[in-house]
Structures are given as C-alpha cells and as structure tokens.
Image (cartoon, rainbow, N blue to C red; front, side, top):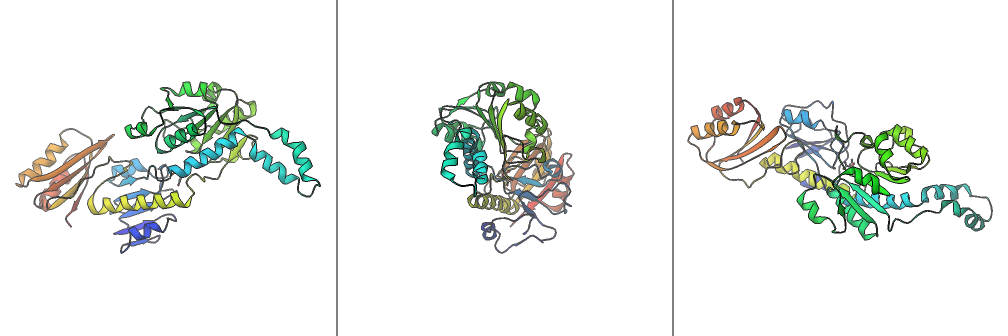
Length: 385
Ligand code: MLT
C-alpha cells in the first residue's frame, strides 16, 4: 500500500501505516492523507483509490470530480468536535464580554505609573454581559453543533437549534433542554448569540448576507467556526458598523475583517489541539486502510457508507451511477458464470452508488471486463487476498 501525505499528519497515523510506504514523497499513491492542502489541481494518478481528509470540511477536495473517477473521499466527522466545541465556548464568553479589547487596553498601560489605580478607573468601559440566561441559536446539529448546544445548556443558556437534516443519533444525543426550531428565520429573530455549524456548499455560501443580518436581533453575536464563505464579508462589516451585529467572531479571518471594531479573528484554531489532530489522523488512516484492503466505506463524502465482513473467494468493489437495472445486469454476469453471490450490499448517495459483492468463486477476467462495460459502471476493483 502506498500512501502519500499532503500535509503534516499526527505521528499516530504512522503506526496504522506501519510496513507500508507512507511519506510526503510517495509517487503514484493508492491513498492520500490530507488536511487543508488544496487538491483542485492535484494531478491524479490512475491507481489512486481514495483520499482521506483528517478533518470535517472537504471543500479543499474536488469530491464530485473524484466520484466520477471512482475515487472515494473520506472525512472524520466528530473526531475534532470537542476541540471546536471548546473554542466556541471560549468565543461565547468573548462575545458576551469585552475581554479582547480590555486586554489590548491593559497593554497600553505598560510603564504609565500606578496600574491598579488606572485599571480601576478605566475598567468601566469594558463592562459586558453574562451568557447565562441569553438565547443561543445553533444552526447545524451535527457532531459539533450537538456538543456546543449541550454545553451551552449546562452554562445556563437558553438554547434553540435548527437542522432539518439532523441524524437520529444526533437527535438522541441532544439535551432535552435544547428546543428544536424548524426554520432558521425563527433562530435569527430570537437569538442573542448564533453559532453556525454547517458545511460550505453552494446552498450555504453567503447564508449570512445583508438580508439575513437585517433579520437578527439588534446586537446579536455571530460565531462562525465552519467556513469563512458562509458569511458575506461586506454585509457583515456593514452590520457591525451599524451595530445590528454586536460582534462577529470567526475562525476564518478575511483581510477586510482584520481590525474592524467588534470583529474577533481567530487563525483557524478550531481543530488545533493535540487531541483533535490525533483523533482525526487515526480515524482517517483506519478508514483508508479498511477501504484499500477490504473495500469498506465508512464516512464516505462522495460515496455512501457500505461495509461488510469478508466472505467468499473474491470481493468486487463496484462504483456505479445510481441508475435503474444496473444491479440486475451485474448480477446476471456473475450468475452467468454459475457463481453464487455469498453476500452483497449496495447503497447510493445522490447520483453515485457503491456495490460490495462477495462471490463464492472467482469471477473470470472476461466477467470482470463485462461488468466494467455495463453502462453506468464507473470503476471495478477486485480484492482476493
Ligand atoms: C475541519 O474542517 O475539520 C476544521 O476546519 C479543521 C481543519 O480544517 O483541519
């Protein structure tokens, strides 16, 4: 197995790839481990099977293009969730009180005489509010959103959450004190603080724009640790200047935001904890190995999750378009060779689908070639060992 790392990855992944070629110079890799390296123009080699993103966001990877090539993109949802949650909690406090401005002011007092006297005299302009009792709107209740919502409840906040796609597991993990709200509009109207935890997609790009800001409660604090492009920079600055937005705290600073009063810019530190980097690396590496060795997909971004224990003499891993009658055509080829299907699983995600088929006996080369020719089949991989 040849694995290329495009970024610095926690050394815990080294143990998982022990005995394999794993470095930042590997050529023609079977798999790639990546964090934030931009892969839009990466020259893909023919044997590349998968890309594992040690993190949640995958906007640096051309996932749709890779789906068309039968290359699976993985991410590691939840692996850095606690780290991001802790940063959000810190930002909630920074949003409620003028701590950052106050710290900057204290620096200006260096060498100016009786500090304690000056501090007592000047501190009133930095008085702030407590977050306990305030309403927090959590937009997006994935792994991070749920942890944030529950922690905010424990801090005494009134928490409302909105996520039309919440999974059953996340709904069950949510504190009963979190009120689920069907529409974002209601969150905009009611929240004193809003934290956003959604992926960047064409639908979510600039979801905070002039129109959205107009709907917020005056002085609302917006926290964005997801992706900078979720927020329209010009509209955000205008909302801060007018006071409509009390504060904007982001882990994705844009040049225009830096130095704007009431904008707190953090240099993408959400997942930058030793624990999160280890968790992401281990999860990404394990998923990559399981896929390369057994064809199992867990936390697929551009293909559905499909995994099953190995059985039979040969495993076929078939990437295909989600189109009708394709399975019957593939099965007819296997059955035509008098071969029993020991086990199979197929699932789809949007226009793409993935089939794992364990055949009782090896399918012939001609049979494999025939499967490749079935209209809609993208890639066929054979695993025998
Ligand atoms: C993520 O997408 O997981 C976070 O933004 C952290 C990171 O990019 O590594």
